[in-house]
Image (cartoon, rainbow over all chains, first blue to last red; front, side, top):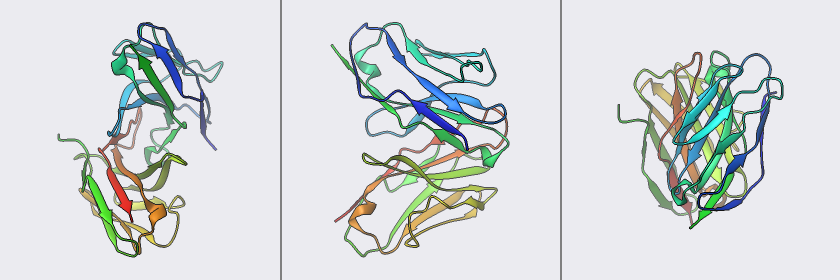
Length: 114
Length: 114
């Protein structure tokens, strides 16, 4: 079946450091890929997405590129802030199949220190 | 739209009691998902519906758990009888089955069974 593997955490960085969180996937067909962010005490919310190979999703300084050849969707940010501290989930979905059910990775906890 | 609305936000109950969690999905969405999140097991998909019909309940941990979706704008997750190991944050999410499908999460219900 479909699966998503994320870099294990927790990840601790200093403010303004470069962030990479690795994500690889296994899926048949043509999934869409997503990064969700969960701030403390809240639900998951969409951070960015990409729907086809070579697409780049971006939002709030975060970026991820859909790489079909390496089945990857790594999350990057050039300069993290304390407010980026959260749990990040990589996910895939195949729209019309399985009622649009998403397959999530285990989540990576990011802590940014001043 | 107000987003996915869950109630209550917090629930504390005694072991053996019945607990009912409620969810109102985003209007127009035709898929609804119930998740459970704990530190030990992460984010688990319990059950999901498409057009109010349960599609897959293989994630429901035991017969003590049941979920219904009587119409497109309301769903419940019931635990009867509740046990301390059911303590977790329960999320409801909705999406529109189709291409580029992303899930929209509610803020969750934090359940504590004492």
